[in-house]
Length: 241
Image 1: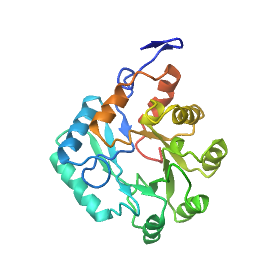
Image 2: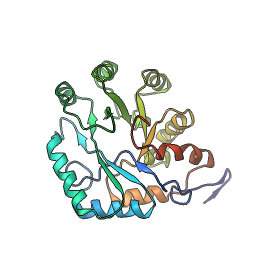
Image 3: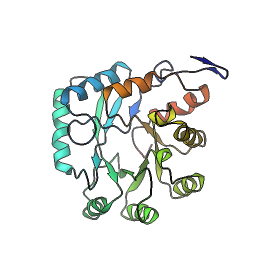
């Protein structure tokens, strides 16, 4: 696709997915609002493998409304691993809403880690939890490192909040749909600011359906400067890279 600003590229045409890691997905079937059936989980993994990817993190929701238990998610993950015959590296973590249930799991040290000592967390897109900064400090004090999922989507956050997160050494994870415009222009512009400012540590699809991930990876909307910055993020497998 050509524009007044030059040629645009997709994730696929720019070969961004070769050797890449998807750090955030809802491909683990039947546990949240993501993929419903094993067959679709396997089809998405096959697509990722065909695109040249190296690894996928399964990060199902855990929140008060979706109170998945750690052991249940581990069992479901083993089902997928047993059924999958491809070459992708599969990893299990979780995406924790910063709510009362998370505080209970944190106190019990009952968390699915995203790598060594890192935990993927989120908030509502509309408003922060009652004590966002205190909760992040509590995670750090417990010896964990928070990774904040898709900060570009939080309407209550702006540049001062992003700078404060960086000063706390909270890792930030980019949603691929954000940078390709799936959530609208406002989110895309925030994602560009964070990407070009070097705020992100990793990237993920946040995939909930096979059709959507294929469309997002095929969307010819990326500029060369963003491709250059996206590539290293997609090579990172966990927060401590």
